[in-house]
Amino acid sequence: MTRAFVVVNPAAGGGRTGRRWRRLGDELTRLGLRFETAETTRRGHATELARRATADGWPLVVAVGGDGTLNEVINGVTDARGAPLATTGAILTGRGRDACRNFGLAFDPRIAASRVVRGIDAHFDLGAAEWPDGTRRYFVSIAGAGFDAVVARRAASRGGSGTLPYLRAVVESLWSHRATSAALEVDGVPVAGLLTATMIANGPYCGGGMRIAPDADPADGALDLVVVGDLGRARLLRWLPSVYRGTHLANRAVTVHRARRVTIGAPLATHLDGEPAPDSPVTFSVCPGALRLRR
Image 1 (spheres, rainbow, N blue to C red):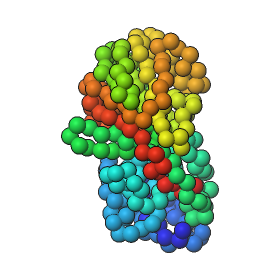
Image 2 (image 1 turned 30 degrees about the vertical axis):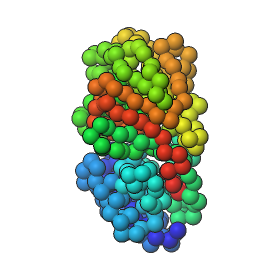
Image 3 (image 1 turned 120 degrees about the horizontal axis):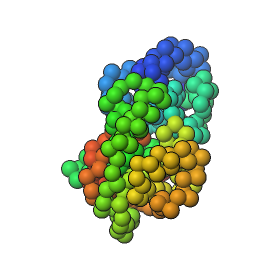
């Protein structure tokens, strides 16, 4: 691939992306890539830029930034039926970079730049979220409802970057945490009980290295649903560190389901790849093979 449109989020990684982009751009030029660049200025801007790029016929759209930037670009290159309109490349420079872990992307930005030019296209599943008003958005690695979505929303409202704002959001969210009675359906089968959080995983990792769904496979045509039941504040605080080790599934309050379609009826906060999304009710589903990723 010798032509690409590159979407750069200079604010990603606490401004690190903006500082590194000139060298990365020079590296892409050295590798023989002919490209145009646009920088994002607000939330959702990467989706607009990627959508415009596909309409202009660019065969490859590259996200330079964090997991959120990649999410927005994917939403710009995927049509309403879940079909890719262009190949997506990724040079991830953000804090979490869970897409690197889930899809075998390079952590080193210079290696990632080389793969954008010389790599091959691979197909993976893509997650979709749809609300009753017809709004439809896609997610790459993880979607969630409940406690983790409250944390994501609070962290986004605080601004800043890095681990500290996220940890502060966790602590603040714990104080107001209450398990909720949620109308949850998994492939049409009701799942009863109180709900702390529901994570719909396309890959094993989220949250900067949390192994939330250790057995999730982004190419198996299904999503892994992790349901956290009634955990009080103290138990939830003790439980959270185990997610990084992947041992949290041993807790009796946690259940795992493989699913193609998950519906949440209760009004809960939601997120897609860590980015705040509209409250439920919402239906999550899988689009098999709809993510065309250069790696």
